[in-house]
Structures are given as C-alpha cells and as structure tokens.
Length: 166
Picture (spheres, rainbow, N blue to C red):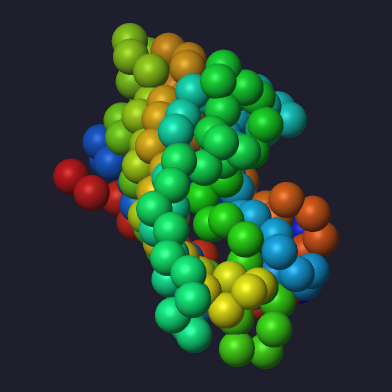
C-alpha cells in the first residue's frame, strides 16, 4: 500500500522512449483514477503543465450498456494536475487495472514531451473499460522524474515497471 509510486532515477538521454507498464493496480478506495505527473530536471512538486485528451470504451458485463465516449474529466488543458490514465477503478477483490504509458524523448531540451497511455480496468460497476489518453508535457526542459498516484487514497496493490527503448 503506497500513496505514490515514484521513478526518480534512470530517466535520462540513454533512451528516446520510456515505457511504464503497470499490472493489477488495485485502489484502496472505490471509483478512483490512476494518474501520473512529471518533474523537470531540478524541479519539485510534480506539477508540469500538461495538455491532453482522454476517451474510453467500455462494456458492462451483463450486456446492459456499452460506451465509446470522450472523457471530459480525464483531460487537461494546460493543467498542472495529474493526468488520469486509468479511470473509475473498482476496489472489489476481483477488480484491478493494467496498462502502458509511453513517454517520448524526455531528455529533449528543444521539444515538448509527448505521451500516450492505453489501459484497461474492471470498473466499480462491473464494466471492462479501455482508457486511451494522449498529450504532451508542455516544457522544453528535460523530464527526469515520473510519479503515479490515485485520485485519492492509496495504491493498495500492483506492480510498476519502467523500460527504456532505443
């Protein structure tokens, strides 16, 4: 059980792309969103400016509802909050979320830092939900830290891994 998962080293110019994979993420509290934020080199507070978009596709297990929708509360418009990447996770014993976040060229000091995320979760109301988020961290400073956390409460369980891609 952790309030945050922080990657504070090894995000550097070694690789042009970093992939974060997360498995069986389980929130402490029901109906929570997993989000991420970044720090520029020398920064603090995980509050970089982000512009993003998010949409979801889901299907309820009893076949009573399906959705393909833009998720207005999942995007940021030059915001400094945490970018949601898994939306509406349930905290039941059989509920969790998994997925991937790609961060492109975080060491660039010329361009903004693009990202894409594709995740899936068993929601708090018995849906399989695929979440798609994409955007950019609007800084030309190098990014060297990433933090993951729930919209509130702790991350009760799960595994986070980081990979560098040449």
